[in-house]
Amino acid sequence: MTAPERPLDRTRLTAALEHANLPSLVAVLHQLTGDRRWLADPYRPTRSRGMDDNDLGGFSPEVRAALRAAAADAVTAWADGRPPAVPAPTGEVLAEIMSVAVGEPVPPEYAAMTAEDMGFAPAPVRTAPPNDLRVIVIGAGVSGILAAIKLAEAGIAHVVLEKNADVGGTWLENSYPGAGVDTPSHLYSYSFAPRAWSTHFGKRDEVWAYLRDVADRHGLRERIRFGTEVVSAVYASDDRRWTVRTATGEILTADAVISATGQLNRPKVPPIPGLGRFRGPIFHTAHWPADLDVTGKRIAIVGTGASAMQIVPAIAPDVARLTVFQRSPQWVAPNDVYFSPIEQGAQYLLDHVPYYRLWYRTRLAWNTNDRVHPALQKDDAWEHPERSVNAMNDAHRRVFTRYLEAELDGRPDLVTKALPDYPPFGKRMLLDNGWFAALRRENVDLVTEAVAEITETGVRGVDGAECEADVVVLATGFETHKILFPIDVRGRSGRRIDEVWGPEDARAHLGITTPDFPNLFLTCGPGTVLGHGGSYITTAECQVRYIVDLLVTMLERDIAAVECRPEVEAEYVRRHDEAHERMIWTHPGMDNWYRNDAGRVVSALPWRIVDYWAMTREPDLADFRTEPARR
Ligand code: NAP
Image (cartoon, rainbow, N blue to C red):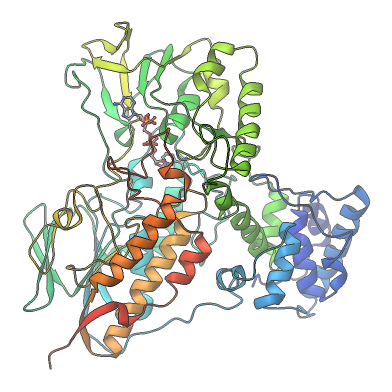
């Protein structure tokens, strides 16, 4: 818990409380005082609309003042030594406080996950018995950093092989103008490593700095081999070891391999004719040249996904002309604080008021994680499947349509081009970061003709019109279905993993473990990307805990190898595919990077995050064929 500041600067606290997120403060007040008054009207906040923080909680000015005054007293008393009345709520008690703080009923199953995240009922840290197990982690991005921290806590030796010269993965590689998260920063943080974020949605430099910082604070660099790209990993059944080969021909061996290569790592460059012909700079968004000055240049950008949506507003004011080639329009949700700094007052509360940071994050998690999940379930009785999948989804459509029309008011040409005809959330949802305002600019053109070819001097559409450009940007996404690509991974049978799975059809029990590949564990594996909301870091924490727990169990029980039983994976995949059949991403009418060409969803999680948390909470050895250690 936050350490009390002594003596407490009451004037500063009172001023800071003007910037409080009042729904968070209600929960803090109850924890500090134990007074149930704070859980009842008139102190019950309204629910947030969308991802809005709802700082004022829908309270009248009198109630706001009463909450702030009571909080100043309660925090002062706490700083003077009065212990919190409800120090670590769990179960029904936590669910009740949380329901008040978020302004709507929270199902009881969220209590255990939330209590763990808030540290009220932390997951036990299991340590392995003395051992000589060796683990190779591939990748030092968000998941690899986490794996290394948790392996060290468990007492398991490991080395991290990282192809780049530093940690950070996607946040190191993607340095295009405007790059940043669209998950709120306080949620896009490890549960054990909060940060004083400068903005509500961290920009790339700060997210990368955060990851470097976490790696440094945990002393990871000495266990990371930088500039070491893995090209193959081959399992040998006789000695139950993995042999890992690097791009320089070096060979390393390990008892277990953890893949932390992510799904958004290998750029996808579509086979557009003439790619090699263009005379100027042409590159994928993940390879934005550090020294490129776009000022006064004519830029053509292909694609309108999350990457393009960040680049376009960031460079539009500086370039001479910006032509955006859109294959499909995108649904875009409003967000008032996308560019807003965290006020000093709010920062003071996050740093000095007990439980405040935890409640602020918990509210973000509630608003962002699973709340939209029911809106993404197909309703077979729904009468308008051509535009939405159920009534809630249709309501989203109305809200986003109204927003788009208001943003593009007076530009019916742009409304026609930019308004999607498929259901909202059918592709990955995007947040407005100035996208519509950028489209309205005089120097920006939105072209909806398909790209026919790249010429020496620009991009030609299928209508024959050529857009002359000095720079061509390919914002065309990533090889999301080729899990582990391009590493040559071979398991017990000697077959490549993509042969075992089938092309672009990866599958794994819990997205983590797959038959024929003993002691290979995936993070960000198939079916685990969060398409409906939430922070990837939450899922990574589930996966890494599962993997490290399993390794500790193996060591405790003298097990040398675990291999997922085929029937366990088959049943999991059956449930996964069945759940996806009911979800929006298998709905006809749009394409998305979650599903492969055959229509099977390979990338995204079909369940709520709370369900996945429960599924991965404890590995079940019965799911595996095990081989004892030789003595
Ligand atoms: P993406 O979402 O896959 O978008 C690729 C874009 O390129 C789409 O508009 C696609 O059109 C278009 N495209 C592909 N091939 C094309 C072709 N041959 N001709 C014309 N257009 C073509 O890729 P992304 O924008 O890099 O984003 C990938 C993911 O990375 C995101 O969904 C997100 O998960 C993550 N990301 C997150 C953030 C953030 O947090 N703010 C930022 C960047 C990326 P279609 O839609 O028609 O396929």
